[in-house]
Length: 391
Image: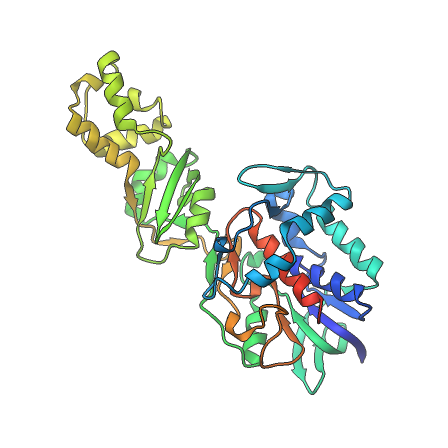
């Protein structure tokens, strides 16, 4: 039987970060993962360039039943700490938009940096390693495909249910329940939303069309890219709002939030009244979208034929389009899992289970979910670092 001080389940962002910190304290640490390579979600993130953090980390950009839970870890290990780490490793990066930081090169650079730090600190990693059983008799005993391991501390960094094709299983939730911890409801987040067949019959011709839109639901609102798909809606604004949307909710969509198109069309009516209504609208929106809006308005003719009331009705379809998705693309397309291990069960400073000494939960498996744009990686770095100081 192998004996270590700390066993970490999951070699993703949070697990690797924790393992490095544990090893730097001189502890014998083993981190395992069922995958052939470490950091697979890091590798595919950001289109292969890894959106590794955000310049504007704020606590209100994380969803949880206890929104204040994440504060301790986020304040003690900040985005600036991780940015310094990236810079020290010589990894070039850039801000893309809205504070989102990406590698200039490949996301593999972030993985290599973490693995190099782990090796330098003396940590051990085992890949292609599955978990068969975990128990506790004072120490934790893990029956693994590589043999039995005994550890003083056990850190669960197994992630959520998102992207099952990469091996996501939800085993972390099972371990939490096994040791008496409760879970909050889990569901896909940062995920495209889908329409019913009757709505798709209208929107199918728009697949591939995109605009900059404001999407609102349940007191949350995002001004970002908005994309029509063959199954519904996607794009950053939709991924963001999906964390707030629930079954039965309507989305309020402003398809042109940067300007009042009613006022713009009224002004053009005086100078370009002979232009067709759809052609006039195409100056502001994709042609296919403009055509659908005009068709749904029931209006026809040139711009000069439209009264103020008619243009106002048209504007409502543009600036206040209400649509009810019927579902989402599910975990297969979700970037993260919303919900997880109840934060009431954990110490916010250490990430240790309050009722089980030596048991820690970090990263996505915990009921803390960030916005799109590097927030979930920062939670992984911060929570992993916090547990790594004590585990």
